Image (cartoon, rainbow, N blue to C red; front, side, top):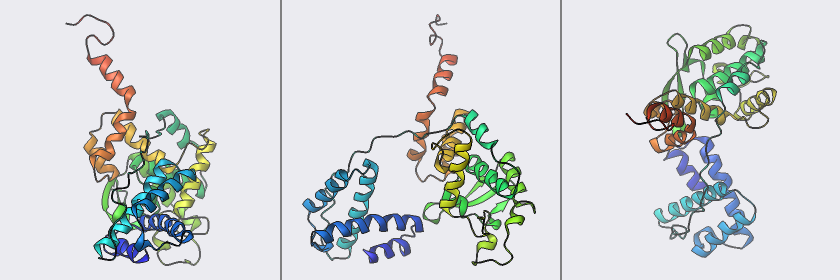
Length: 300
């Protein structure tokens, strides 16, 4: 399994977070096999089906069970490709995952959220985090991975490294640029710079934690959650909800779906199309304005 994870990182170029997620799922699978005295090279289809059932009985969500099966299939396919053992998981049915809609905020809720942070150094950082997540549609890993060289505020652009280390350039709107400029000022980031950098690379990080190191994904999550509660959103708010909201609001205002796909860094248009299902209000509004009989009037 470790050999497979190394192949995933080196040969396939998967991101560290992706490899870590596969490692967690495969550790659980290895534990399941170990408790039954089974070797991964001698697993049968029935064993894989038992593992899927075991995951369901443990109360895991359908999406989590489906992801676990993806990891199991992948490692067995790797063993088969290496000529070590046949793949017993190829025909195991994938659990049905209910289609969920992105939980986008309303534009009024976004306005309330972005009015929460104050003006000290940490608040400037937090405002710049919220504005960039919403204004640029970044993933949280892309946000915390930003370095100073990735920003060009004069041109209104930033460079993000997405899944699989894919690089893309995203526009930065006027409000997000102002928030970043406020954070990068001496009263913002400058006030959180340590006398001596603890780790190499932190000196170039855009977002810093309270100790002056590069902000982690968990740290960014905590900041977003904190301001979500302060804005009265409870635990609804996550970094990904802001990304959802960015896409949904752009489509609501008439953006081309291909442009939104490029902005979000989706490899497939089908991933972006999920956002079109959350814009039913816009669909109804346009229909009522455009169709002569939508509101019961006479056709021309």
